[in-house]
Length: 260
Image (cartoon, rainbow, N blue to C red):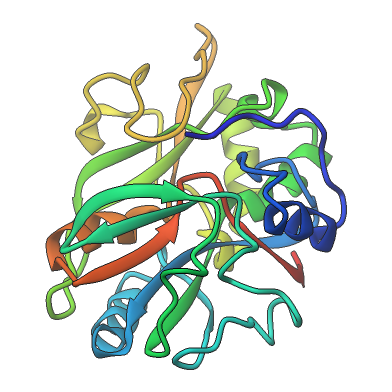
């Protein structure tokens, strides 16, 4: 369960240390603005090639920032001296594709054959939106961005396939165009929206009931704007059914030292 944290961390290492010490277990949206955040997928090395190809085939939803060597918990490119086993707010554990539980660290689960994938996140572009006077609503409420499972299918790679997941931020039609232009400059954070204004075309039946995250109010003068989302691999994991898989809890990202 994500407990929202009202104090905002500006420094990525301070936030990671708070995660490591069990102090911070909340969404990272709005924290360490200006630094790249990452979705996390950890798989056994026997699954790594197929999943890497899955990311390449679905790069809009899964832009790869870094892939760690088997058994290595240190993201040397993204955040030297960080530890992927402890430095996320909250992890999700899957066995045979089924969600088991959440935990604040994975030290007791770590294996020498684990390969870690760091995948770009739309939170990275939120600083740019904020600077242009377009702060997403969930930031104003210290909540988690709403995310939806869509009717769009990803391109399969081996056992990995499934539905595309999107994040949603409401804007007026004019602001939606501005937000699209701004985020198009961040391809490693999912880039421009994949859809503007039409939830039905994505198979979203109730915009007020997200599959992940928290609902936000869409005013009469606003429309929903949808970006590809790094929770997409979690749907692929459910179908691939690897013996074990570890991911971030939606909204609870790894915050790197890379500048956005």
